[in-house]
Image (cartoon, rainbow, N blue to C red):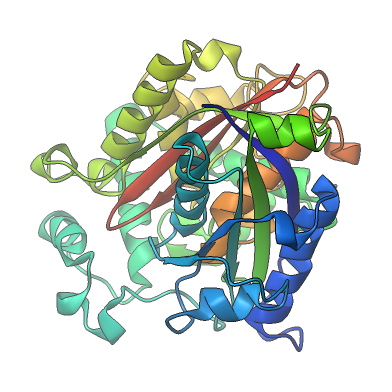
Length: 396
């Protein structure tokens, strides 16, 4: 059975504590936006998958109560930075499995200012990602900088040492995404920067500067996932975007065996998820037009190019430098501005990526529209670990 995204909505992503709102206010805005986009009432929704990381248990119920009190089942989802895509995957499975005809995937986050810690209430030894940080510490030691910036920064250093990737190539990722976000009214940051300005920004963990790191953010995003029967019944064929294939993977021995931060930050998971999606859909990287990927740090965009098959291993620095991943190139990657510039409220990110792709594939992305976009791919990853790859196609 097929599944379609028939409505999307999101709030503007904002700096934590910059707006007087609660997570349920965000949910009402994003969820209401998705329902309005589809033109269907909340009463048509049969189940809801709600993702978040920093709110209390059953926050999902409190959030959807803002949309209506219909008694529908609500599943609370937490999968680190891949939470949003995980909620979307659960919604898709409920539809393709024949359990429901219309399911709401909703993600939100109300975060604190400052860098993310390592989990485990400040005790890294108790963190779910302690094994990941242990691999890093064995090779690079453990510094006083934020743990997530450390592990990705050390991955960047390894990539530079192994493949000759340059600081300017890493900065080119951030410059591109900041430039893209200038045309996104929902992005947390809308200022454009040159490669030189990205390099000159404050260093967070060498070689990553502040402008190469995604910020903490408040915000929400929602997607309404429906069956083919629902689409036909409600006359939504002209707006529906098909979820052609989707895959989630977790860490295997490959993530840890090499002792490399390149693998421990999720490269094997992404590669495996992408392979499954391509096999299930019969499509390849050559068929993609637009991509929203998890650029939590600039190095992760480069690693994802390689894992998705946009280029050979070690060639990603040259790829971004060539202009192949922006307007006028082979693909447009992160037209929304990506996590680096659009923002990264953990529970919302994966669904916001799909919202952007839905707008792109429907030709509704305004100044950031990718001309002729028909096929899009979303990539959402969380340490600990989970990688979700979603392939979408404009319904004909």
